[in-house]
Length: 370
Image (tube, rainbow, N blue to C red; front, side, top):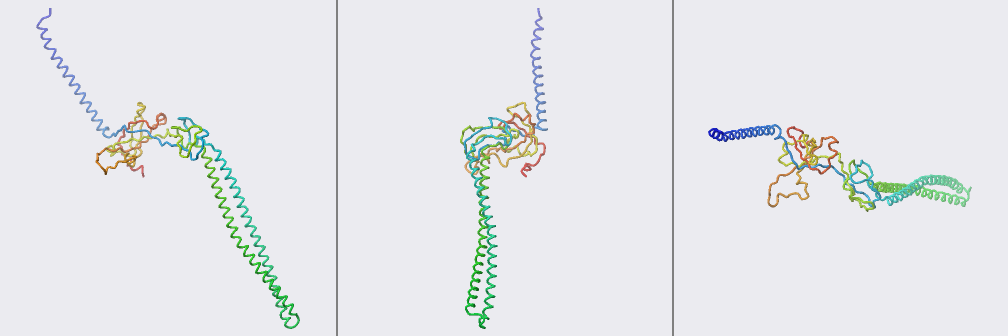
């Protein structure tokens, strides 16, 4: 049988051991807390206080909404939903028949106007011949008048001496008057022919202008015909495809959207109290909510010229009514530095968490705007 005295001593020592163990545990916990706080404080002092982070960030891409410039029924659709396309690739075709007819009509008009120009130029060249002929007729008439004048001058003294009769003098006078009248007539014909040149030159210019207008109309018709095929302006991926075969499309009707998935960037909306030390060129670490294991680096690219509220549909009017101060958000564009393999799965609209290291000086915020 156990000694009652030893049992009592053991019972008395048990609380003391538990108290010592408790003190050791508390002391260890306190040490761990102090060490942890010290490590956290050291990390905060070394780097943490320079990190500005936000989860108000989303991936963006400068997508292009595709709409036709001409109206008509959709005849063909060359792409499917979410299909990758290249710049210049056909997307949709509008029924081209009436635009082909317009091109043919304008081609016929151009041919007719070209013929008008040729005819006007031929008439102008023909008028040069008419002027030359009129000039020759005038010279012949002047020669005849000069001969008639000499005959009259020779006959008049002879008649005074009785060698020639008065009748002969009157005949010479009549011939002289007729020759001088012919000269005046030929001069009038020559002047009229010369004045006709100005009119014919105006006709040539008018024909040239009509030909130029016809060519412009043909070019416009050709442009409209070319526009019946809607082509992708950039490399990207088809999204928001609403076009249907047989649909009647008006100019400006949204048919589909091209998203340049290989040119994605990040827009992070930092609080205005976070951007005082941010600069263009500073490094950023990026975490994608959809891919927790994917870590991407980035670089601050530019700062928006105003807060998000300034570009809202209904911007605030703080000068009216009651005022409550609200911390504003400044959109900051961040360029992704990851390679194509990492960013292949990224699409616009994904939620992002981003942290900017403000320790580096980077460049002044306005540098990118200069």
